[in-house]
Length: 580
Image 1 (cartoon, helix red, strand yellow):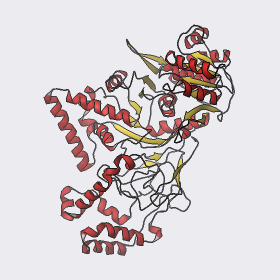
Image 2 (cartoon, helix red, strand yellow; image 1 turned 120 degrees about the vertical axis):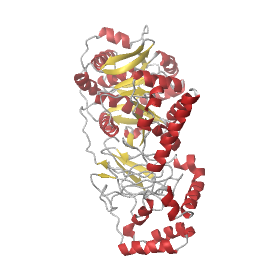
Image 3 (cartoon, one colour; image 1 turned 90 degrees about the vertical axis):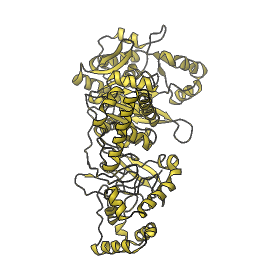
Image 4 (cartoon, helix red, strand yellow; image 1 turned 60 degrees about the vertical axis):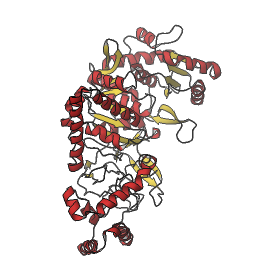
């Protein structure tokens, strides 16, 4: 994987310390004189020779660790005398300074990278660190090389300017790592119920509208189901599968299984009978919680390979322990009170990774709780937020960001009916969601649905919408200001997105046109990087002004480095922190 550019440390074993560039004024004046004397068409070769000839102290080393507060966008760092030529200029100033050379150079750069758009630029996002991998990194897709370290004034900073990422100075303060408020994940439900008791926690769609489950009622339901599981043989050391569509009972059953002392094995609803039986057999699961939609697959797996597997259902079913039966049997249940450690395994998640065969990833209470604190802090979640849950809950990104984070901060979650763009926009509008977690394909569909809606409006209104979008793009291109938030508020209102304030993308690289398409509409688009083994978020952009082509800074308490990078900066990403 590739990491290009960074705010940096000094390369001498002090992670996160900013390396201050320095060059004698005489050398700067000499270089400026050379720029005036030499032909324009030799600019690129001259820069390459000058960098190669500079003393090593002017070039930042590779391989140092990073800490929270430092960003690596997809731009390698440049030397100070080059930064002067990057300052924002009007089109007239650019024409006066170099009417031919700069434009020709930009055209050459775009032509050389357009073929690598999907293959390289969007497939190898930057990971956050405190030093650049290489000063020889190449520009990709018109993004760079544009970056400079910012002085340490409480946080790192990056200067960005290119065809798709305009220049700005970003300051993110070093953030202290918040310690988890509880010792084990399932204890969050009682902690939150005591603070947000009558506030809504989970929303279910019904033909009559959205139906809420409040924090206090959710805590009682969790305790009732935990006692029901314990009465049917679930205890400390047990592995219990969980296969269901997204619904409020998924998260509550997850917490109940943890309260009973078990380790949860989340299962994809799309698994075949063979895949389901393979995972449950490998995990040595004694029980499996199912919904009516997944029960047949698990029963087939039990008959084929797991005769001792016991089923518990989330829906009423004769002959099987069920969620409704637990609520009737234990209406005023209290916590089981079983002892345990923060280092106990919470979840065993099976992921194919890059080898094709699913392997189990063990995450502890401490791993998930630290990631919950860091994610909520980085994304600025609050009790007034409401998330629309779209991604499958068996994915650790949705489980951590879309279930445990809202539980920790007192926010609420509404479960979407489906992934159709029309249903998605209806659910966003009717649920009053403020935050959406998704993947690039989801946002491509959302953006396409918005533009289809504009195309179906009467001609005068359609022309006005197109004109406002064009003005928004042009203002951003010329000044760097993002005016869509205020200028396009009526358009968002008609699209049902008036309350939506934050979009978070993960799992794959977000195309630049999708980022700017949603940003120009006035939506804040954040992109992050993570993996299951890290609970899962490692790095992410921050509100209020994220940048495209970047996954931003490491979360508080997380360190990232590149192991043995080559000349291109490619190397293995290493992550260290309490979430690993």
